[in-house]
Amino acid sequence: MSGSAGEEYQSSGMLSREQLLHLFDRFAFLTSQPDVKKRIADAVKDQQEPVAITTAIQEEILLEMGVDPRFGLSFLGKANMTFENDQDLMIRFYGFVAREEMACEEAELGPEKFAERMNMQQKLQEQQLEMLNYMRSFPLNDQSAILEKLHDQMEKANFESEASILSVEKIQDIVRRRVSPVFQLR
Image 1 (tube, rainbow, N blue to C red):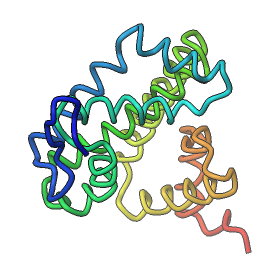
Image 2 (image 1 turned 30 degrees about the vertical axis):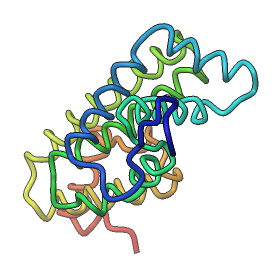
Image 3 (image 1 turned 30 degrees about the horizontal axis):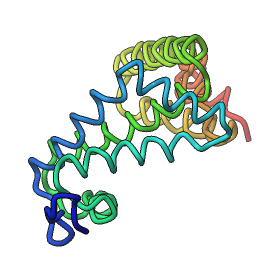
């Protein structure tokens, strides 16, 4: 693909670690800007998929970098295999993917509902952390039983995030039933 001034865009080989980090950082910066948030939200109002706009933003960044957008996007699909042993880059890559999902979600929900959802998510994570800290006070075999019950509960709830919490009472009940065979169901 040739640019207007006859410049050539990279369309083969690999994107370097530095190119990927630049793409991730630039995308995070742009999607945090009010005008870009508005651009994505306007697309949603016009019945467009927000991911089409976030992809267009990625293409624009790739063009700025001198990379053919089709090549750059197809390389992104292989980046996790190419750089699978670079733990730092993989963390940044999945952060980039999460950032795109959040930008789309914010556009679909609107700023107020998105903030409310983020607040609920934070509270849920705090509850999960409290539960995990409480679980650590039990022996490993009890922790395994607790995690097994938690997994069952999540499976029954179709892995809804609210099902990822067990109350103190429920944990105590699980441990009590493990210790006292009288309580075990047959």
